[in-house]
Image (cartoon, rainbow, N blue to C red):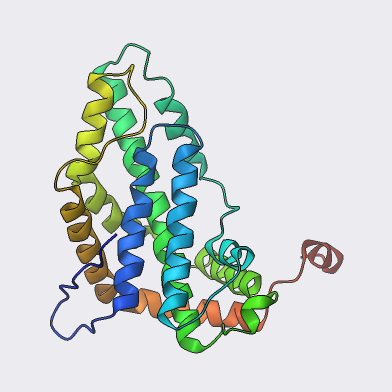
Length: 249
């Protein structure tokens, strides 16, 4: 996977790590195009873990498999909407009607957006955590990766991601890769095996990641707020469920 060449608005800083975050978010967002149960989730986890390793290596850090999985959130499942889209992919042998095609494509785009959004937010905050010095060679060997990931998840839960998701929706809805894959599945519903990348697909992925990188700059106020939430949760981690129940929360 090659690095995208940032094409940002005037005044926007060029950042190789953020370029990787954008590239991997797009790659993660395309994993739902694999219409094979469990294989798409496996591909997603591979992309997430690859981004973690890439951001760590950028700072000369190496981590155990356990630490990488903790930072990547590899144990997280797909959203309800994503599960529904995956289920519908398994029904491709049913007669295909126009209304079904439309609903299916909308759900497929939503799945891509949900996955890309989570990957973008988590990747951005991991990059921020490394810039802050929250992780080093020693802390990567302990419980800090899990604490950092928990703070990332808590921070993301406190922001309204709809503006970002709407931008991502426009991005993926216009994707030639997604359109081509949807067309392939509907033209040959009996052949829903692993997809073969189309010629020039890498160029489009690079273009999508460049547009996403520009979005990071345009929405810098949003991401600055996200950083604030992350810092607060890392400093004051949420109490375990049993403590909340005892306090009447």
